[in-house]
Length: 124
Image (cartoon, rainbow, N blue to C red):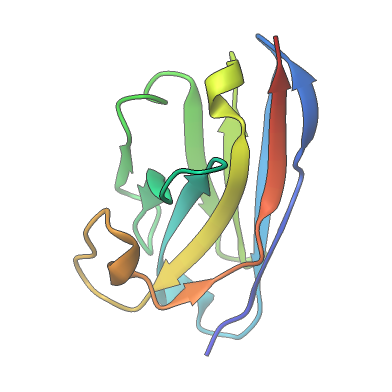
């Protein structure tokens, strides 16, 4: 079992930056592959980025590639999402997710545990 708590969301202007954090409970955080998803009003939850248990492998949605960076600190049981050059279309609730699967897909169904979400709003 792992519990996830996101923080760092807020209101930012176009072109600005935010860093989201997701702190996990439990002593086995380093064994989980982690990801960030987001959900805008009226839309389905979509994949943003993922990182392997070691931090050695990362993947990004095309829409955020080059602007967002996912990272993790296993000593702090925390995964981060650095978001730069934010656009109004990045506005959404951002969710942290964890999975014990060795090779998770980019679908929500691959992830066992979810945080409560943090709101990111980018004004134009």
